[in-house]
Image (cartoon, rainbow, N blue to C red; front, side, top):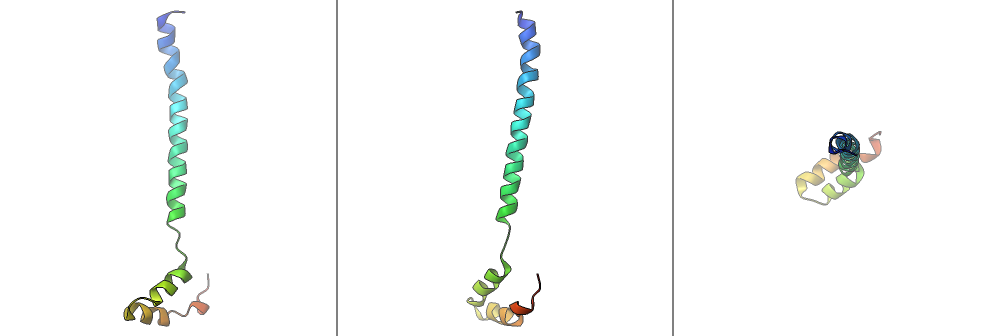
Length: 69
């Protein structure tokens, strides 16, 4: 086969595979970022309640049992 054939065919085979791979990596990184940003509010307030007096006053004002999810 001629060199021109390889010059024309190889980019059309390699570029789509590269683009699909980059898209997959981008989506998996985005899902990982979203899962890391989830905060359990009850655990957060309980940890803050053990902190300084300002945090404990805020936690006392927030009655966790009355919060509806």
